[in-house]
Image (tube, rainbow, N blue to C red; front, top):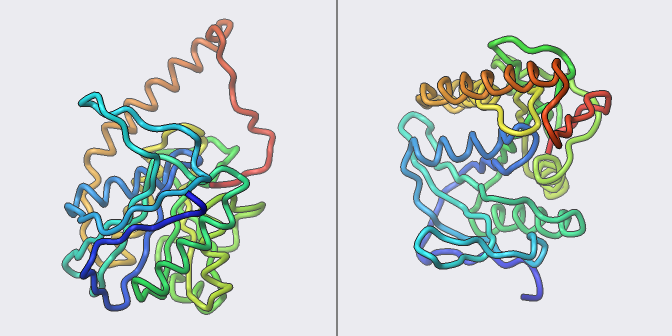
Length: 257
């Protein structure tokens, strides 16, 4: 494999779809959001992305086989959205040395092969504050005209700082470079690993923006279980810590990926 390759199904014809990118990162917010939408709307796989910049490993399957590491593009046509929606998700982002090539490939594929012009990337915004049951949803867009389109939604602009790392940042960066519009929507989180509550907040914002109904009841149970696990971890730390546990350094700048 000489470079990043996207294998697309034949006879896929789309008219001005939007792209939602949800890949692993801080709080796994992006991936949770994409996987939830994929299941909710019974998405159809339309393309698979392979790259030498993914981790050098294969995944073991339940039936004893293997599969190459990849990202997949899915198509959904929800009622009320007024447009077709492409989802991009997968188990991994590119390794650091491949981030530019792979993410540029994604944007050019969406623009040239799928005839799309607007991209949403989803991530988590790491906060050092103690969060309640209603995480905020932040946004950064390709231009101020795009920002204005979202001013009456739940997405908050101008309150974030630092850098957007990885696919969530570079994809809208390349979108701007190629004349497309894009926005990175970030769920506020203090959890590095898995934050269903932040993902729920983003899904509620997307539901409002895209005019589609998204059932998020399942995420409430996951969020409750996660909070209980975190409370237990905090209790253990208070009495001496868990064996071998490494806690995240919350003194570092907030960022998403």
